[in-house]
Image 1 (spheres, rainbow over the protein chains, first blue to last red):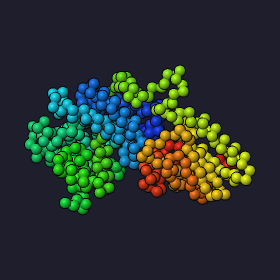
Image 2 (tube, rainbow over the protein chains, first blue to last red; image 1 turned 180 degrees about the vertical axis):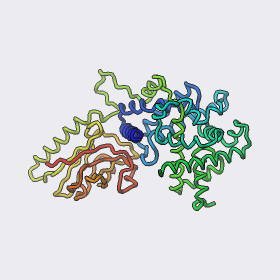
Image 3 (cartoon, rainbow over the protein chains, first blue to last red; image 1 turned 90 degrees about the vertical axis):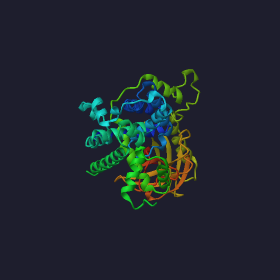
Image 4 (spheres, rainbow over the protein chains, first blue to last red; image 1 turned 45 degrees about the vertical axis):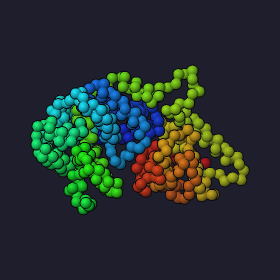
Length: 194
Length: 231
């Protein structure tokens, strides 16, 4: 547990130094976070060169925006991940009409992605507190519910697009997502107060 | 429609907004509510935080070295070649600061000491960053009941941020002593809150324009710290 605190604390300190233009701190921040964020960009874009470009865009933004990071609003890695997602989705939007944006719905289940990639306890220990809590709560949802939420989030799909990808009626997908989010919130807030 | 009293609906819309499935007119309407509703913005922010943890739920992949080279190139982070040592380092203009500020503090003390009738500052504090580089000097002038803060010449503060000075007491409570409106220097009121025996440390935090929204604690990162030295 203390390691998680330490990591957040370390990343916060690094971001504060980056806000003042400290290049060495920026490099340290990059080394500490880029593998996780590159893995994330790859899950959205699925092509190395696109993910590399999105990651580069994201770190350039992080350098410039570090001073606007607000400690009380989000954990440092969460804040950085949101930037990576925006950059990746920008690239995704540009490709939307082309065949390159094809993806498999099965890859969108975050819990399965976690089990594929980070099966060992060592990899799990790398996860932030926030990710561990979300993983535990997501495991309680049905697989296709997780898939629907993952698809909407990772690929910026609408209810209709998720329904088409999963060959399900629109109403079903809407209800799944709504209930899934409600259950996630209940589960996560229980964890937060515990 | 008023959603202020409908907690369930607020939460649901905030979640779908953060997920991205709230679209079209519904999204625009929600955004118009967001502008005047801080609690709703907070609900969205916590959903964004919860969902962003999905970023880590996958296999970490080390990016190839060319990604970092590209970032370095785009931000012009590579150091200037050694033969151009006079070039100002745009990325880190305050690199040589420790020496400069240390020397400045001594010069200041000597100047003040040498000025016959000028009141001696009873206390000074040099506030340094995590790498022990001095970034600003605080001088207490009990005769005029002023606290003078001078930021070292090369410290760069983003335009939309304000430096705020705090006294940290021995039981760990921060007290705001004031902000540096122009981020260069300031004359603040001096009282026991700043130099009282319970003050253990001075600290500077980086805050939104106008100072920390919380009067009792910094919301931004604490950048510089230092203790009083009695002269």
